[in-house]
Amino acid sequence: MATMIETGAPDRQIFSAGAAAPIELISLTHDYGSRLALDHLSFTVQPAEIFGLLGPNGSGKTTLFRILSTLMVPSGGTARIQGFDAAREPNKVRQQIGVVFQERSLDLKLTVAENLRHQGHLYGLSGSLLKTRIQDSLNRVALADRAGDLVETLSGGMQRRVELAKCLIHSPGLLLLDEPSTGLDPGARRDLWQYLRLLRDEEGVTVLVTTHMMEEAEHCDRLAILSEGKLVALGSPFDLKSQIGGDVVLFETASEETAAQLAGKISDRFLVTAKALGKTVRLEREQGHRFVTEVVEAFPGVVEGVSVSKPSLEDVFIRRTGHRFWTEKTTGEN
Image (cartoon, rainbow, N blue to C red):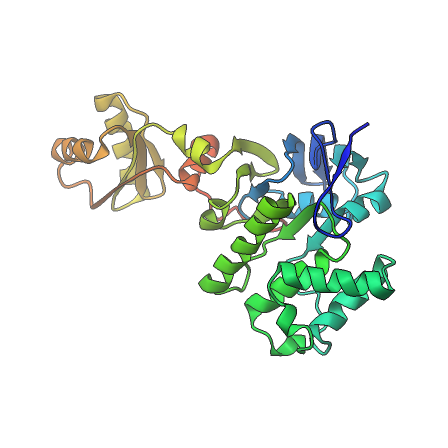
């Protein structure tokens, strides 16, 4: 049995190395009859890390989020939260997690403290303990001085922080956040990630975030990149990008037909793997800026524009799936 270690936060407990993982997926599958939303996903989220689920619409992010937050039962496989089966032990799982949904769950006509008080009642908290928890939760998101303010008077960023405080009221060890930056301006987005890092670093809270934003995914310690229900990449943003050698070179052409022809010619002449993506030809090459000159001189009049860049997370996605992150097919259920 795992040993529990007390920390400074009220009733806050972090499990030692022998404890169950915050999240463990074993061949997790879900289908909606005509469509397979999750295709045998297996991975583990480690304690005290910010873990991202990155994928376009239709990749399976929302389905997985609903399963982890006990709103949906999977068709097959297992999802364990702190050792508890999300499908068979949902009540125990709910005690372990704090959830922030993409849609607002605050009552705008109540004060900040009143929103937290009602949330605490749902978890059986009352009296002095609830009062202490409210104060501590607001301190953790730097909103203690706004406890008496009506939520409707707060900015979008502050409202998101109230959502965080609300889900922290029962001191969970795992936070599940669905597209938390939706509707936030850049400043509020930076603040949100600052608070998530503080929760991770100072209190050992594990955070799982779903996102379709590449720049947001860069803030995560590790990522699971999903495409059409499949796990296509797993690792830190740095490690995933490091797997792509050299520079990413894009050649813009006049038409998709021209791009396809150019991709074939480049591949044959220079013995590289060039792929047509719409009107663009994409390839990976060391010292890409020098290679550009060779291609333009070899095929005069064909290339209409060029870009050379270091690998991004979208390049990882393209390498693993063969298509861009956003396509005409990325619609429907997440």
